[in-house]
Image (cartoon, rainbow, N blue to C red; front, side, top):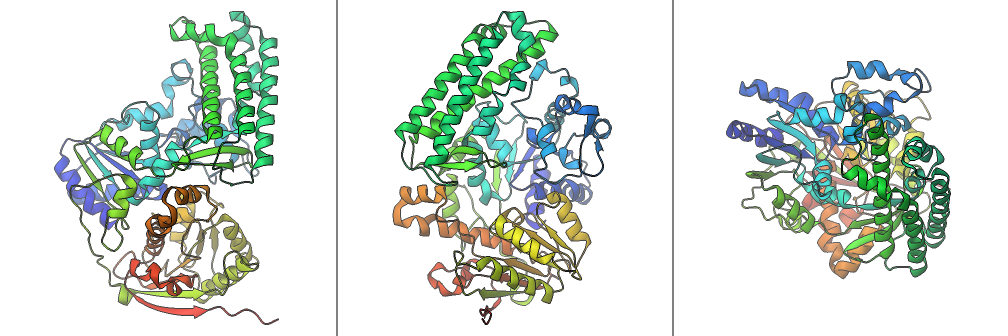
Length: 593
């Protein structure tokens, strides 16, 4: 709250009738701003400035998709949700209001998306929650949004950010490079490509095709040829590359298969050229025809985007400035992925194109040992003024750092079990009251299973059980509970008091050496990549995790880092990057045979 107030108070007082765009990286902080910080500021300042949270399209429900559900209900394992009633009662249509964990399949079934949006052709356009959100935001003095929405809109070529603003405030500004990279990432998803060719999808065009004289059976026959070509391409991708494996050079036979697939899609689109031209020239006026042709135009855009993404990923033309690899979507289907390695040019161009009157970048970890040069190099931003503010907390008195040497490397057999046993013991000794931050979902699942094998005097909460918002709510309410999370909980978690007296971090947050982006960065920068990029990033992420513990001058507790390298590798200067406090070292002994 401290740095948020320090930035927002002068901005609100000085901005008068101007509008402020407040960007952050985490949903947790956005919701805290809306529910807690901004209402408190209104009361403290004696003002009545307006504000609101603007999310990306996929966070809102699509009325057309929701109303197509059988009976207007979301089927769940226990009690079905009356979606029609919820829509009538909801002011925002924000899917986070539904009692569902993130990643639940029914959210994907009903979320708004560019692909499924019919625009002005939609029969529900007058009640669209997405349109309403952007319309409402035009009148807010403080608009809270995230970096991904900001960069996605600008990089899509749609022009300026769709909400007017005069001042730009960027909190968690150390996350700007990652957000820009995610927004610029190109993906060719085999499952998405196949979904474009499903008989159920194409049959929806039959009535329109009949009225326009388009040969539907021939169209579906060509779609079958596309499916064959798509399966051949991604089957070869699966044979050629392991899951997560980087691709450093173009494979001619894969590129050939990709071009065959693209030619099949081009042939599929040929009968629709006239329909597309007529639509673009405003040749459809009947509302019934508009809905059908709007769906076809969206489908054509998706096909063309899939073709472009596949060709870019297969060409591997910009390695090592861009990384390329075989990935997977949430359901395990193959995806070709490409992302920029260094985003400084992308970020600089985006901010320069927006040209706000004033810009303020702030973070608890923006500098390393008082130096902003690493962040400036990664973002391309050259600030006019910089300021490093010392912490108001007495870390020497309030916090202890415990470095635990596990006695084996991450790659060693039995590492996960030893880490989990150590964390279990630490949580029991502390009576719960612990936030556990883990570097992998595999380890998170292993620890969750272990902690729930027997009854404990505290509740165990784990990422994936509920939405992040609900998990944090329950963690705050139950002062003895333990929350097990991954990297997304390193930021925006603010639990002062007795509810959090221990933070456990499994290791220094270095990326995996086989990460395709790490490999591309190494190829780009050579042997200096670790010192120039990997190590500074790891220090920043570790500081964020450690910063979850002491949130007020009365807080007390300890941070446990289960990684002896923090002391063994003195040249890394890990302790120098953390708050100054007392530290101890412990070693885990191997159990006797």
